[in-house]
Structure formats: structure tokens, C-alpha cells
Image (cartoon, rainbow, N blue to C red; front, side, top):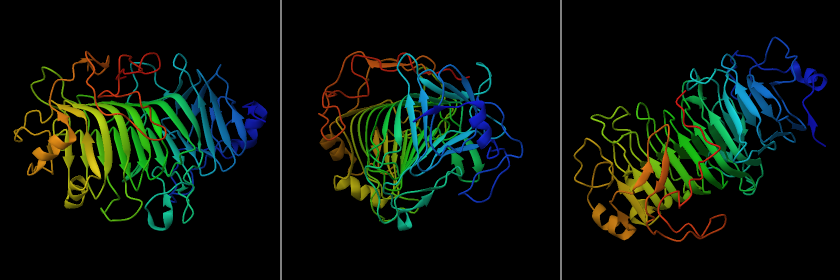
Length: 440
């Protein structure tokens, strides 16, 4: 039976509160020297079912964990502010659950402690979810970035593992570096299973990737990645879930790639191969209309960047305004995957990419080589035309197109077959009410 955080119960776990001191063991969390004595501070660990109150604003301190058998329930309208000093981060461990019950008019918000107008990337950490599903790491088990602990089901992965339910959640002004090449993203999903629900989540102004998947089979819909200084959507280590209704928009001042996809760090043939299925996406790059130069990372600012033996089945996309290619395929293994039909973007619009560069007039390349690309573009039904988005102003976007362009018909479990148009939006702007695009 759930209980709400009260002073007495919180004091019982206060001795386990976390602080800024760093532990070199990635599977352990920093431990605080001072107890937490307030029922509006989240420190974990949560070993049973705990329900927060929508009437309060909480402070997330240190690396707070939801343990195996524990569940944290967050009702609509709850605000959680991440602590800067202790790099507030919420970690769902294997067997734990996070339940976020936001609504379109009353989302759950994880944000900075700073007042509006003073908020910045890296003001706190982010959210990490570890599941028991599959990945292509040795032995089927990995250690999460951000001191998040182990993930994966080992030699017996649970494809439909359930790490909870997240609906209408905003994660903003976070992201932090724990150590070199060990960062906390907006939302990190490690070997998360398909029993988990993830819908209507925004990762905004994050000091790393907006969303990153390390393996897993989780499906997700209505994801928004905005203003993140690295990749909007980063996919690795055998992720094979299905995504639909995906919107990414880059900050014109700082950005990397729209999608960055690897099979693994070395481009091996490890299985399961990274092969997401993604339908109905609108990905807007850092270039803005009328700009005389592009401030975002030059060579790294590709829309869809697949490398290291990765595959991917993408359809009904709009990719526009990137400094590099709309779709850049890097390496002989990924090129082979494209030629063999395991990597493509079909029934899509690629427009106004390659800004400021002369790249032969192509929106697609094999790492700068356009040999053989023309036939693929024709086979994939790629259109090079203005998608007519109402507004791509970063702080006030309206990516609903003036006229729908018919694409393919989504088919398969968890996909909406009625979305037969190119892009993430039909005639309705589903961003309304629950998102935030302010830089600070």
C-alpha cells in the first residue's frame, strides 16, 4: 500500500542521503555526511512504494535510487528541483519502478533550483532507468553512465520487463558530467523492457544528450528533445524498440546531431544489433532562416548519423536545417546495412540541410561519398521540398506543416496506423500545454 513522504518516515532513510562527494565505484552512490530532515527532499533509496504529493515542490539531492522492489509514484503537477551541488539524479535500478502520472494540462516537471531566467544546462543531473531487457554488451550486462549501476538481464534477458509508467514528464536544464565519458543525460534508458510505458516526455536544455538508449526493447511515443548541447536522440548497444511521434529541435547556438546511432563503441557484429524502428519524426537542426552563419558544431551537425555497424528502419520523417547531411551513413558496415535494406529513411522529406557547404546537392551520403546514393533516394521515396512548418523559432516552435504530405502506413505492435503523413505532426500540435522551450 503506498504511503506519502512524511517527516518520520523520511528520517529513517535520511542517514542514506547523498551528497556531492564522488565515489570511484560506478555501482555505488555518493553518501552524505549530514542527515536530511525535511519531507520535501528526495534522497532515496526507495525500497517500497512511496507516493509524492502534488501539493509540494521537492528537492532532489545526490544520486537517489529506486531499488529492486521499490516504486516512486509522482502525481500530476508535482515539481522536483534538482540540486546543483550534489548533482541531483534519480536512478531506477533493476526491479524498481518509476510511475509518473502527469497530464497535458498538469505535467510532472524535473527542473533547476534556479529561478526562471537564471536557469542553465547542467544545473542538476537527470533520470536514469535500468531494466532487465537485452543489450549487446559482453555477458548481457552493463554499467550505466552516471553512476547508475548495472543493467540488463544477463544471459536471460526479460524483453517485456517493466520499469514503470511515465506520461507527461518534462526534464529541463539538467545533464552533468560525473567523470570523463561518464555523463548523465536528460533521460537515459538502459536495457529497458517493453513492459515500460514512456509517452509525452520532453528533455530540454540538457548538457548532454536529450534521450539515450543503451540496449533495450522499450517502445515510446511523443518524445521532445529541445536545445540539448549534444545529440537529440542517441541510440546504442542493441536497442530494438519502436518509437513514434518524435520531435527534435536544436538550439542555434549549440548542438551536435539529431540522431547518433551505433551498434556498440567499436562497431562490432555483437548481437542484438542496434536497429530501432521509428515512425513519424520531425527533426529541426541548428540553422535558422536568414542566418548568415551556423554556430552549431560544423562537421558533427548531421540530422541522422548512423555509424559503427548500426541499422535502423525509419519512415515518415521530416529532417531540415542541419549544417551537415540530412542522413549521413558512416563506415562500410553501415553502408552495407543500407544497401541490404536494414538501414533506411523512407517516405520522408529532407530539406535545407548541408547549409553553407557544397556537397553535390545530395541530402544523403556515405560519409561524404554520394556514389550510389541517387538510386537509394529514389527507392526510399525521399522528397527534397520545403515541409512548410508553421514555425521553427526555437523558443516558440509550431512544427505543424501547412499541408500534410502522404507517407507510408505504420504497421506493427505499439504503432498508430493512422499516422500516414510525413513528420511527427498531423493537424494538431501535441506540444501544447505541457512543454517548455525557454532557454533559461
